[in-house]
Length: 367
Image (cartoon, rainbow, N blue to C red; front, side, top):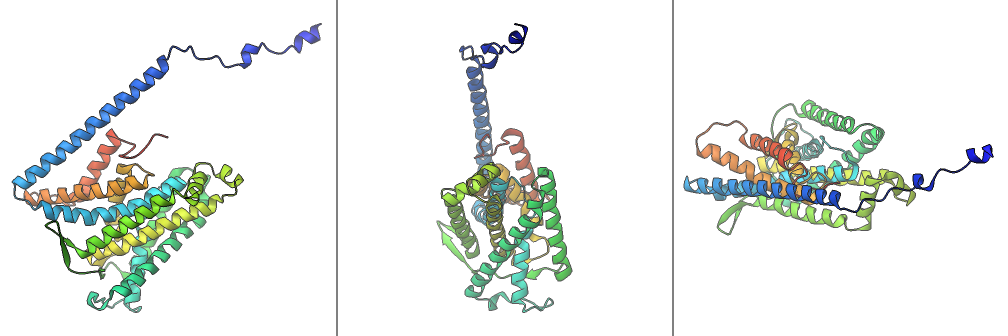
């Protein structure tokens, strides 16, 4: 009898979850929480919108050239968006914040300069002697170089740190950026090199005069964005996202997580190269570390503003930040206020506001 008493199973109720009380108080509390957050976020959005409208009205009243500001903002914002698009893609697919994104763009652009110089590091590039066909072919080469470099970074560095913390991967990408800047300094010193644009001149649209090169950047960004958003609607895109969320389960279904992460890095590297070539064309010159020192802070801010990991958000954030930066520059100059690097300062302010009031970004979603 004692043995049977010892082997007796535990009461059934110990193995069954206790059902909820059914009073719905938890659901109501959660709903109330979400509504409160939504109302607060809409208020912040209204405040931001109102501030922009008031500032724009003040600029017009002060006689500032708002049209030129919009045009300048489009050119800068499109570059921010292109770099941010690569950052968002890599983060969405691999959960790695890539601080080397800028230099994966600068390095291929320097290769373009080297080819145009015929290998003569002390030579000079005459933009007038570079045809559209040459620039198109060299840009294609730059994209291949950028993609190849990015895949190499993933295979030889990021994959080896797969079991490490995200901070370790972030520091590793920062190290890659510093290494590439060092290579550029050794090869080209710190001198600025002339860089050709795709088109010179300008086109008038709706009363505003747009530099032709700015329109090229905007068109390239639009095509890249559509292709990337379309990618996530294909079986390949679904496989890429699945491998990011659960690499082991993806492998069981025949999806190579390593191949998918390399695909994401390759696309991001190609976007970085496009940004490097087009960004250097904006300045009509290139220096070591150009994309990191000039565009990376804005690109990361754009990615956070749009919702880190959201390609559509990265584009929206980049274009919006371009206008904010242009507005900051135009306002300080128009009012005669000396503010060094006003666009960068504006980017930091936007970043702090987003992290404080809307950490998920404009298009970000809760996990």
